[in-house]
Image (cartoon, rainbow, N blue to C red; front, side, top):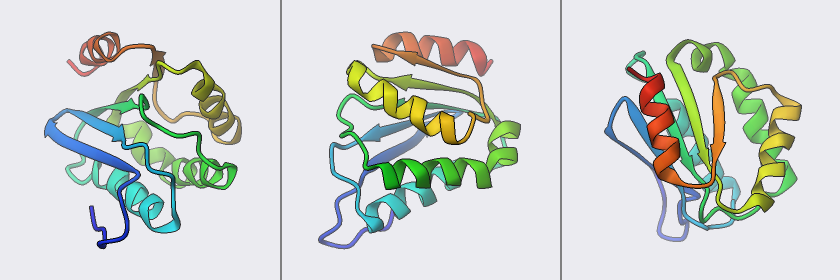
Length: 134
């Protein structure tokens, strides 16, 4: 992920356990730079044109500004077919119930291109996603 010395990442993406890919939100507020990097890194998940499963760990995620929620929805719309073809499922780890309406808002703008479930803990989400990626 490209960053300069003043831009802290919005999320860290770990591809070391493919086909499972972990997207961990850092707790940093979104900025134009770090959110653009985040979306670019999401796109890189599809470079191999192979099936994947995504785990979005929102344990430390701040509530995103509505403008960034819309950008996320637009990104999903733009890449809908790519995501639908290769993403076997998305596990959203959201122990904080206050973030769940944010996900509903994004999906109200753009429906999810992949099957998904929301979990309060990572272990349950990983177990569900592993069963989808076999």
